[in-house]
Image (tube, rainbow, N blue to C red; front, side, top):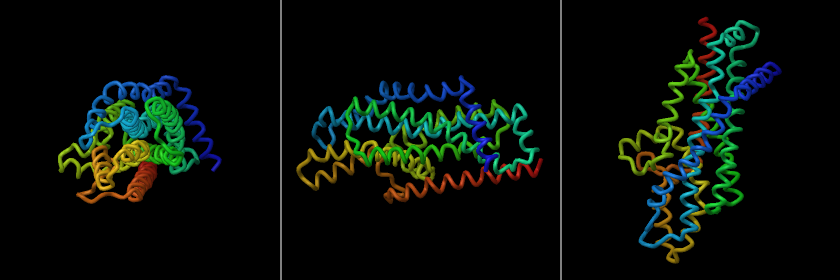
Length: 300
């Protein structure tokens, strides 16, 4: 256990010692927040305008748009920043440090889990910093989060960061050069936001693509974050509608349109199922990553 903690501490220190890697990981979410607020806000606002034929008050509209922007940002960076933080594992391969560690008495599983723990620790610092900036943005635009929403949002970010860490660890285990890692990171950064439904609502895709996306665990992470970042504003919108039947219909339509409700081949996915899928994916990728590391050591 002491070896594990020492290796984890060494990996975290190495990440923060690399100022270029650390600051690029830290500043990217803040830049994305500005870009999202500048370019995506108008698109999101238009999607809410004229809901069921009545005008949405500006304050509630701002809360809806801000909640959707924040959920999109957090859903993306929890995974993309993990790939950036995980580059240390590739650097150890290229400079020979990993080979030196593997020929020592250190078990390959301990070394692999230490990389995982260090990547998670580095990533969660960045994601929590970004989340703090998002909370400030929500407070300025329109705060409708309850205390339970905030805690649930924190738990969603932790869970999705674990998923991003497990996924990046598994993928990077097959890579041997910094060039390969950079290429994979670029692909993930460019495509993950679309595949998880952060940039464009899944409801706007055709049926075939929607069904394919629902097999990806990140989709459920996005839906969880979106639910807890926007539910307060949606409920406030529903309070403006006196007729109960119309209220239920409008709220369902809004939630369907922004992927608070997601459907697997036409069947609505319950919240507990979303958590189950995400936890299962974390355990699966982590187990596959450790197993591959063991097989690699035996082969060598």
